[in-house]
Length: 375
Image 1 (cartoon, rainbow, N blue to C red):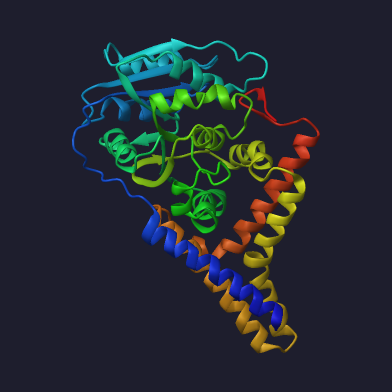
Image 2 (cartoon, rainbow, N blue to C red):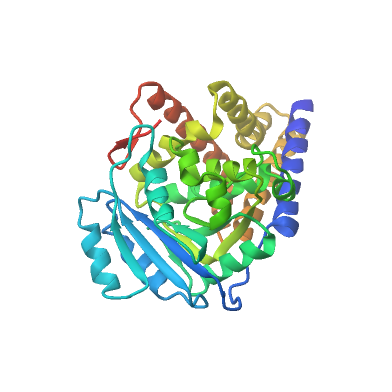
């Protein structure tokens, strides 16, 4: 009985934190901002994205409220005709520049190097940089809204998390955990106010930075060998004295990160080891997550079979409180709440398996992404 009560207390505290974060501290940029007067560069790194870059490009060309918009695209060694697709979509639009990237030198991973090439190729009068991935589709006022929120927050870096598009069972199990994790475990207000680099989060799919502050922090050169270059960039900004902020970007952008289960599995596998750090830290965190969110329904069933209805009831309530946290997270970030939240214990179990797989393959030096080794 005591164990079940401890589980219930723990889940209740975390769900309460989710509610406070989502209801009070999560930034929500307006989707109809005033026109931005500064010059903004949208930077789009591409590597073998011919099949899905067209919606992204068309959305960038349709941006409103940014008279000084520039779009710089980098073809990072694509072999599938990505550059040809870019040329066909943008035609002779004077706002767009297509560049050809060079292979990363020793000590660099592909994504940071591509972003650094883009950022260092932009000169004044550009004052804000917007990094966008090929799987992101922006709403017409997304860039203007994001830059406006960056300035309103007094931040160097703003991460407006896009709405994650889910279509498969695997998507619905795993993808909502991205927002749920930081809404549940990261104190958003403290993160914005604190100078501690450890209190940082960011999503590289859609990232807005003050250009001067970005360069002062060392930009992507400061995170050249980091798999989670987005989070490490946020930490570098803090080390340089800048501020960071998170926002719900679900009204500004949507993102279909992976097309199928193998892509999703490998995408998470390549980076989860970097999320948790030392294997002991990962083991502790996973044990906590499994105990709080996966164990309660199992305990409830076992207790019922064993003839302990009170214990079963407490464990069942703990399960439902965890489901509520998942629902709050989904509704706060434009995600799908029902019936997906009911499978939250399974989601956490899958996350645990993906994390173990990530450490296993890294130990064997078998991690790669888009034909390049990582980790």
